[in-house]
Image 1 (cartoon, helix red, strand yellow):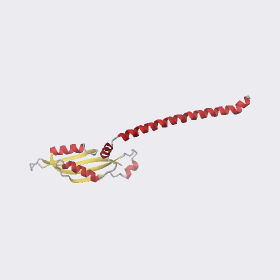
Image 2 (tube, rainbow, N blue to C red):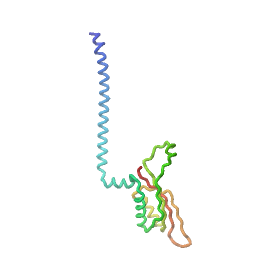
Image 3 (tube, rainbow, N blue to C red):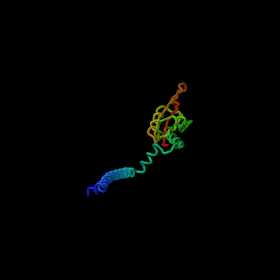
Image 4 (cartoon, rainbow, N blue to C red):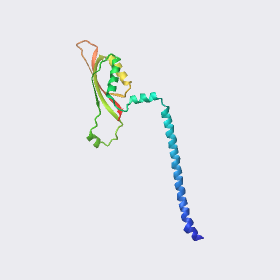
Amino acid sequence: SIGTFFMYLKPMYAEIKTLTATKARYINILQRANEITAKRDTVLSSYNAIPQEDIERLKKVIPSSFNPIMIARHINSVASEYGIIIKGIKITEQVADTREMVVSTKKDSQLKTAYISFGFKSPYDQFVKFMKDLEYGLYIVDVTGITISGDSSSGSSNYEYKINLNIYSFK
């Protein structure tokens, strides 16, 4: 009977211990999977609770793709509120330098940058209001340059402005 224990029962006992440990790991994994599923469902229900109008507004702040015509139209509509006529608007999307992409070890950004430049003439107070409206407008805008020039000989209160902006969209 001792021989039977060592030949049959002891290996079976070791196998049972191994299977019990494996079972405990699987139970732990299933519990974590259930927790993750519950968390996903909570986040999904929170996302679904956001009104569609708010989601559309968020998509306008950082659009999923870059539309230069919509950007130019937005800038013109804001300018027209102050009687400003935009001249020489230039919109250039960011062009990736392949050499830089190969050499760079930085993680790629998820945002694409568009460079915009334009000019106009207006009184200074209208310029300030226009820039404030652009700042609080539909798009995230970084002003990268402003050039102001005036004609002191004409006595006019209008100044000539040249503006450089960055606007972002998802890639």
